[in-house]
Image (cartoon, rainbow, N blue to C red; front, top):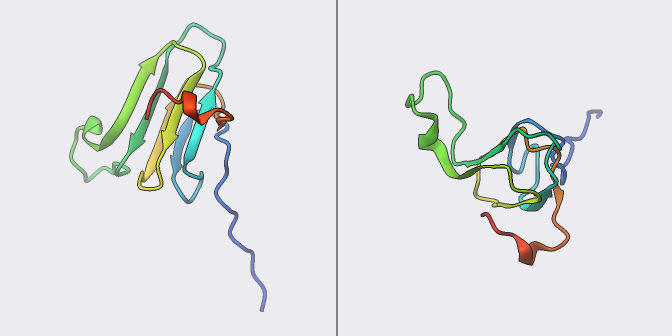
Length: 104
């Protein structure tokens, strides 16, 4: 029998995109130092990934979000979240000090 084992979810988020929790990324505490430019970061924790046939308001599927220029950024992605979307936030890594986590 041969086959390729599925990769474990990553504990780092490389940058912009939509990531499925427990598939692409692990739940947990994350921190980002931002991108270094003046543009704001926009992140969202989602309870559903919107498709063309879903309700037409993308905000309907948001559990929590932030649009900020504050750095560093701290978030908690929960095991019950379906996905995490990040735009212009830079890379996310495990938060070495989860007690400082401000946004959840």
